[in-house]
Length: 305
Length: 221
Image (tube, rainbow over all chains, first blue to last red; front, side):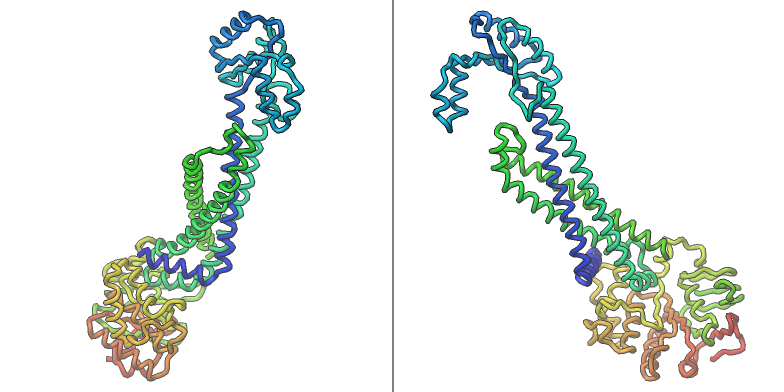
């Protein structure tokens, strides 16, 4: 039974190839953008999460700080439940880090001595909400000269400013991406509605004949619904595949640019899982889109009669 | 089998049928005749459940057509074969597919389609045209296709609305011979026609309508 409906649906597509192309194109575009927005939302969430959960705080120590004072402060920080991974960086280690960072210009490394780099205590906080409080507390320590944080996007004065800015960017990405995808989905829905309405109008005589020979509503609707399901399935596959290839192609560059920030998974399996989930969600969304579009078109035509 | 009791049908102010009463027995062949606008097609539409009477009742096999719900109508129609003056074949489907669609509608297993389609196409003389499209067929062949589609579901009743209206005499006669053959196999046939030559040649009971009323004086034996 499904064969005859599938054959009928494919026949409709063959008979009106430009309508079919229009529907497939707009659906492909929608699902292409939806896939990219999904990945962008994932990456921005990862970026935010990275800064929220791994804010590196550096307490630069005064030159006159003794080993026992440093050990005492380090011990207190380590025992603080809000703080994790306390690490002492000596002047020599700081110089080594500097030299590594300036390895492309060795002359810069030659010009400095360990004495100009302060020793420091580096640590992370478990939760961003504690960060500013801890920074303020550590600033008051007698052995601490100043406190800094590693993240900065452009002149922020506190760690919360950095995360606040990231949160704003993430919100823009989510809402902007969502609205853009929503507009495209609406356009796809309208195009499906128009195409199916035209299809039903073209099939009026056929529907009349089928009605007279005892075809049920389900029998008459099935090829129309199948046709929209074909459009959405092909649209999802094309849009998703192009986006997948684009992300795969740009992944090495992105990972290299962002360094430690896990904007994309580094292993292929995790990336495939994310894309697999996006594909599954898009298939479900495509089915909902095509079912609602075709059923609404059918009911509109029925009412018009 | 088919019973009309005081059936009245109006379209706006126009009375299409007025207090029409008749019965058609199982296995009977009846002509419904009369001039254009007499109500012939209205009778067939009432039997098919396409329209409902404004007064009186129509029953088929003891089932009141007016009492059928919208979801029951398709299943009711699956037991009735219908042939139309304008053939009503699906233009983008071959002869075989036009016949098969009726089998798909009744939900018959596809394994049984081929045998049934070939049998019925042989009955109407269209074995050679099985893979042709409607645009490649003559008027008579289109009507045979329509007849084959009606017969393939093995209906209890065969309704025909001016089946020879668009055909020349020779073709009309060959179509009528097929109807005669089907009738002899035990099918109930109700045919609306104003073709006097056919009515004279095939000598069946005639229900004669004039202006939506039955003219009981005219019968052929």
